Each structure stands twice: as structure tokens, then as C-alpha cells.
Image (tube, rainbow, N blue to C red; front, side, top):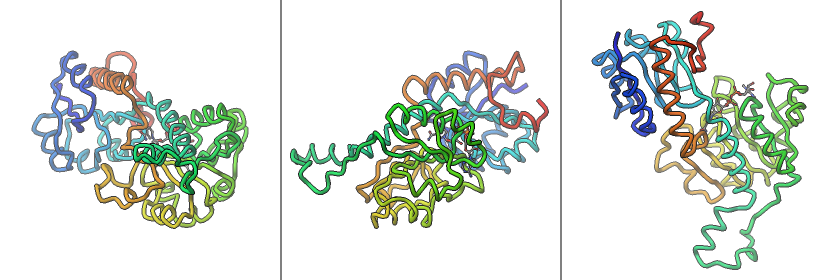
Length: 327
Ligand SMILES: NC(=O)c1ccc[n+]([C@@H]2O[C@H](COP(=O)([O-])OP(=O)(O)OC[C@H]3O[C@@H](n4cnc5c(N)ncnc54)[C@H](O)[C@@H]3O)[C@@H](O)[C@H]2O)c1
């Protein structure tokens, strides 16, 4: 049996490689995540397992690489992996959910930074504009008593709710698949339609997975329905928000501001027009991790790949196509 694992992103914490090597695996790290280059690496080295971050693992990869048995995503969302093609080729696809709390904390950091206008304050203080509070551009607002709409009230959405309730926010949930009773238990008030929630929210936070029904769920007509004092936060998936429509909503002041951790294209191009705007805060798809977690997650992912390949004991993994593979 081959014992070669491919890490498809050189920025994955080195603990992943170290752990796999300690467990007797050979590890190769792809420098180029392009489909053909991954196929060549997998077939030349008879790769059995892959540890991926945001790289696209396509149907062509699964259809052309018979040695593959498992693909582990170093995070929660598996929209970059063609799970159907993996299943057709008997390949396990798994994710790691350690980062949920980190995403919730990042969301609250965005809420506070937007509300307190920290980006502007930091820049103006450095520029010697000590009396920034006298200027019309001083835009701080109060978080206590404001309304937060959480779109997608799953694991992360509910953790965000818990923290937002601690800040005395009024928390609403939009999620057609979660009942009003379940939301109420988590302290959320359910809204039946997205439009209803958008109209009342001071902050809207996006936490759905990327699917065909959530792609560009936030576009011109949704921004038109938001208050012009409201903020949009996206820590879910970039393509859930129409970036061009968001640019216009921010530039035309249809909404007050936004904060994004995820982008339609990642890494986002250096000439992304959103970079020109002052009313947006950005981070580079880092919400789901922090210094300690990166290392722990890399270790857990590596141990889980080894365990799944050797089929020893219980998989420490959440295998997303478990049912379809009859495991
Ligand atoms: N930025 C990051 O670093 C980062 C890290 C981890 C996860 N994520 C993203 O966060 C997403 C959510 O993670 P989770 O663990 O909470 O997942 P989850 O499956 O527990 O929750 C997702 C929720 O979205 C709901 N949903 C699905 N379609 C919807 C729709 N059309 N409208 C409204 N709600 C809908 C589901 O019913 C579910 O309750 C992941 O899929 C991933 O894309 C981002």
C-alpha cells in the first residue's frame, strides 16, 4: 500500500507534515494547485491521501487518480471539493470543525471593529488627526441594543448568537432548515424571509455553506432592502455575496459598511475594486483559525488521515460522504 500523502497548500502548518512523517508516511507538498499539476503529482507518487485548504479538487482529479482514498479539508466548508465525484470513485472526503469558535470570535471582532470604526480611527490617529471625533467622518455606533441578523444558524451561526447576546444585541436568525423552537432555545428570533430580516438588521452576518441556492444570495436587491446605516459581514463563503453588487452598495452608501474574510476568488486579486473603499474591513480567509489552533488542527488532520488510511480504530474525522460510501 502506498504511504504518500499530498499537502496541496504550502501554507498549511508544518505540524501536518511533521506528524504524518512521524507516523511513517511520505509527504509531498504541491507548489502549484492547478488541476493538471495535481493529477501528475498524485499519479507519479501514487498518492493515497490529500490534505487540502482552499484548492479546487475537481471531478477530473478524482476520475483520473485511482490511488486516492481520502481527502481531508483543513476546515469546515467542502465546496472546493467535488464530493459527488469523490463518492463515485470511493474516495472519503472529510472536514475538520475545530475552527467554529474561532470563526464566531472573528465575526464579533468584525462587529465591534465596524461599530467603533476602528479602521478609520487607527488611520486618523497615526495621521495626527487627534480631534477625529469632531469630524463628520467619525462614525462610531453603539452595539448594545442593536440588531444582528444571522443568515445560516448552524454550528457557527449559533456560536455567534451566544456571543452577540452577551453584548446585549437583539439576535435574529434566517435559516429555512432550522425551526423557530430550536432558534428560540439558542436565544434567536426566527425571521421567515431574508427580506424581513434585512429590513430590521443593523448588522447582517453570513454563515451559510456555499451551494447553488446560496450562491450570490446577497446581491443588489438584498442590499437595497438593508438600512443605509447597516453593515454586512461575510465569514461564510465569498461567492454567497455578489462582490460587484457589494462594491456599488458601499460606494453609493446604500449600506454603511462591510467586513469580509472570504472572497469570490481566493486569493483575491491585488486590483480588487473593494480595496479602494474606505468603508470596508478585510481579512484573508483567516477567521477559522488562530496561532494555537493552526497547529492543533494540522496535527489532528494528519493523525486522522493516517487513521483513516490504516483503518485503525475509530475515525477522528467527520466524513461528509460517510452515508453514501456505506461506512
Ligand atoms: N471564514 C472561515 O475561515 C470559515 C471557517 C469555517 C467555516 N466557514 C464557512 O461557514 C459555513 C458554516 O459553517 P457551520 O459549521 O456553521 O455549518 P453548519 O452546517 O453547521 O451550518 C450551516 C447552516 O446554514 C443553513 N443554510 C443552508 N442553506 C441556507 C440558505 N439557503 N439560507 C439560510 N441558511 C441556509 C443550514 O440550514 C445550516 O443551519 C461553512 O460551510 C463554511 O463555508 C468559514
